[in-house]
Length: 269
Ligand SMILES: [Zn+2]
Image (cartoon, rainbow, N blue to C red; front, side, top):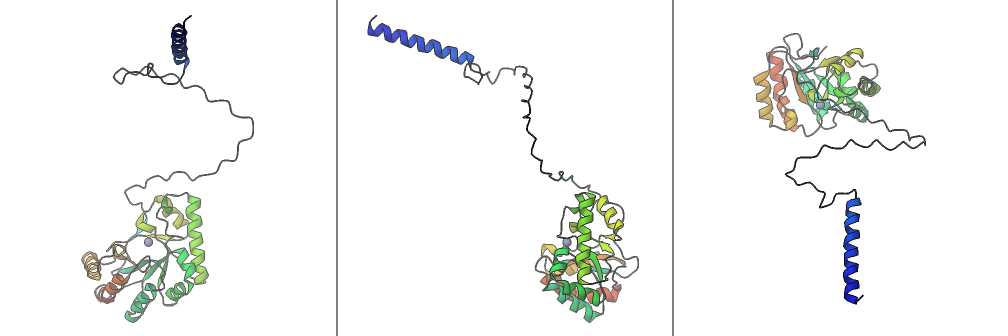
């Protein structure tokens, strides 16, 4: 055989073996790939999973169940009015060492009472402010341990643990104080959280008037929104914590006196 003939034989052999290899391959190949325009072949049945190893499986980590979306409609049983002509001011997300004393000073000067929806971690951090709220005759409301916007979607056990822990922190700050209300952060209620707060002796406190002071409008806007929406018996939502509340404080300098004159102000009972 000439060198040329050997080379030609070798090339033929390589091509032949290459073609065999391609036919044996399970993976996708250019020749086997269907045209994008061709109709898809019936998909083969998935192969059964490999047998499980006989060693004991590791304990699986318990992950909380995914939270379902809340219904759009508010559940039954929410308190939104005072039941009398007088209106109620409610202050959420405190106690705060800067803003809560200013609100308390304004209320004291006006001889008016209000309701404070306190967050458990903040009650633990500023117990003297919780004690002052109670000492000056205001009402307390549980606003969850750490302002959990999703609390209403959690399990009954988780909700109960959260609300109980919050009440314990409040009562450690103000021994013997009653906490007759619960307010769900964000107003994101569920029938379940209403039921648990009831079991724990708390009414579910919503509101009638929300000037959205958490969104940092000016004090003029807060005043206009409250004055425009307030009616006899309204529960008004304001904030003494959770951010800079200078505009709320400035609005309250007017609102506390004006609402007291027109309607009267009561702490909720
Ligand atoms: Zn809040």
